[in-house]
Image (tube, rainbow, N blue to C red; front, side, top):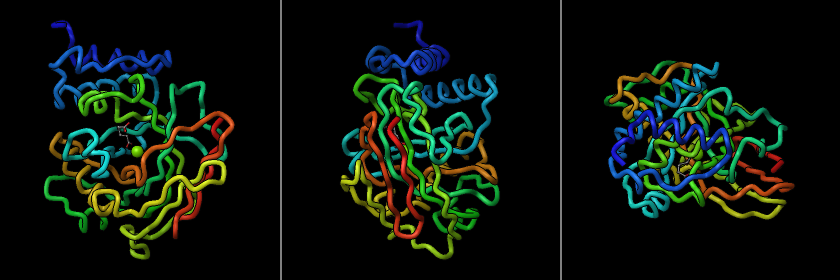
Length: 260
Ligand code: 0L1
Ligand code: MG
């Protein structure tokens, strides 16, 4: 029990990812897994991904809906890294051979036009740093059996990162009310969930401000060109083989992904 460390946490979760073998909660096995240790493990795993040639494409937020926070017994969201290996080009099916138990969630994505660093970032100043917005579907995948984890477990696991696809419609932020931007999530033509951007911390720009301030507290600046996945607008839905997941947005267009 005492020989756990941030390095071992990162190694265990990367090994689970590579072998597509889910494990049980690390925090239940090692109560020393605090949020600080979890973020350290996240950064160690990122260094490993970089050493394997991956580059950072942006960041993502998790646990941005009040319902999900309540379910997890937490009162704030979490942040994690995105790399180019997580980009799913449009039209490519979900790479099931790389994933354990993929789930899809529709998101509003921002692309930064200039660097953004906390502290003190507000939704308004965050939005002023955004170059454009796009629709996105994130395919999350947890390295924990049955998606059963604590907040620190999830943070150490890079917020259940899997792959993500962005839409082809590009919107100037001045022209969209992101709090009112609506989304219909469909599986095989059936609507399974609906939401607006207000499900994401009241407004997706609040999520971006939270991310800038959280990374800023760790001395990290969000860079121009980075994609920011602001958080699931609906619950994540399982992606079954042979299925088709579609997200239709009010002004950000539609994305359809084959389940693989
Ligand atoms: O992107 C996300 O919302 C994932 C958050 C991490 C926890 C989960 O798997 O729900
Ligand atoms: Mg997400």
